Length: 417
Image 1 (cartoon, rainbow, N blue to C red):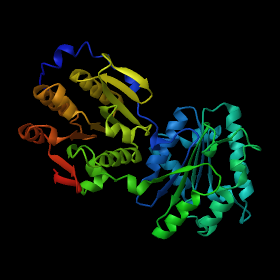
Image 2: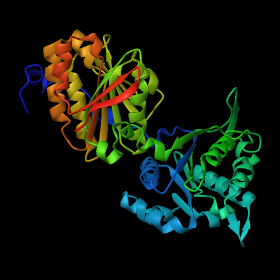
Image 3: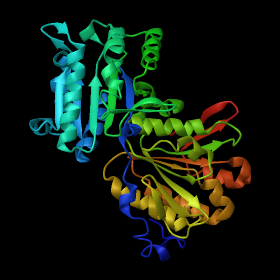
Image 4: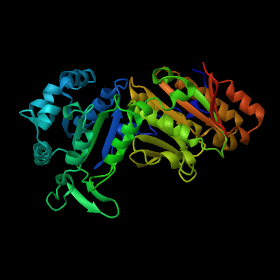
């Protein structure tokens, strides 16, 4: 690695400038306390990568997990959990992980028993609460509703909107009423309802998702696992595996809606259970677009701080134009990431060129690209070409074998390795 005059004199002093514990990746699926997520998938999606991460994160955090899946997938789920580092049978012994099939959950003597299914979940919630678990995580993978002979309407009407889920009078320990949101789950609970939509047409899928948005049950957020696992890579005519490891320059028109491209990359990273770290400023449109995503770690440049400062679980403020501290932050992220695939977004090049100057920006970029050379690290560098001389932009372009342009006509891949 080349010796850079702006870096090396401060290397030892900055070695502990940014504590590693503030760089841990956020929660998978960006699932917040008290929230329900509806996940749609097909057989092409690696759903167990996402579900296993959600389970592992919970078990490591001291949570209890209630997992229901299609009958034929019980042993597959256990095997996949083990593949992702979770000994399901170990946690099942003390019911920290409670697993059952859809038939076990909903059926008895070949008859549907909705009331029993609802009560069994409530009983487990009460059990886990008494045991002192931090949270209760529920995964209910209903598959293609074959246990109801495809009658998803019955599931939504009779089970999803069962009054016991949303009665703050009868079940004050689980639900509460707030205005104008309505009924919400208390922070102790986090839930994923997963649906295999492979055999459904677009109209049927639309009707199904619309049905989940009615009534008085807790509001749900929707995630299309197929769409989001490759939402950015498709723009380069790639799949996600082909995207991993690329260092990409994105030139953008500041009056365009280029932020949605970064949003797609963030969603793709989260859907593939890959940590994402964004370097930008607090006032940037990128930060405004992504700020609600609790799974993203932000490094925000600030003129009002002289040392790195963590202000929340996912935000670190760095002194503006301190190239050494930016590189130190990158280094600490790489140190804490282990062998995982990770993603970076750098929305700081134009700011750095303007305030730190051309030479320091070139040195930073060369050094950063060397640090990020791993095939497991994906990085997107944003640049506003209209703010700089053409020769400066040309020099930066030469450093990237993957280049995108976002203008009035949307996103275009101008160079792909």
